[in-house]
Length: 123
Image (cartoon, rainbow, N blue to C red; front, side, top):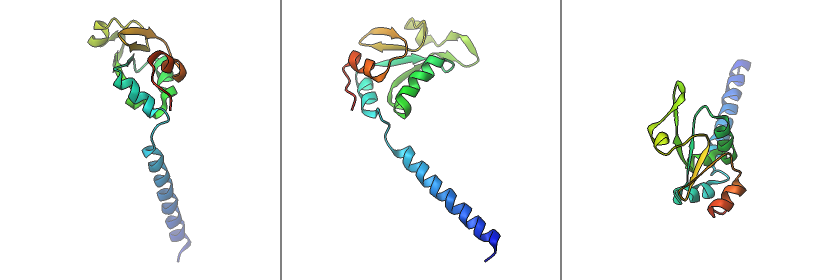
């Protein structure tokens, strides 16, 4: 067998192994999935904007579990000075803003703080 053929077979094998590992990591639940589901069950929402660094930090704290959090996007693409109608209606003035039991709290919260405020347990 030619060296180039062996090289390409090895390259394909490495690619398949990496793809399999990546797929398995993708399918694993997030660290805070149960916690995020509890927030959603209690109708707790986070209002944020795509351009907001603090919102990005809040999302990072949750990791991939953030996709289970009720998130309301307030930003309008291409215009950082305006926000969506729902955020105007809810009087959202800064980001991130959490709506918990009808009360609004602004800022980045760690998981422990949110757990204390909401009663959702960290598993």
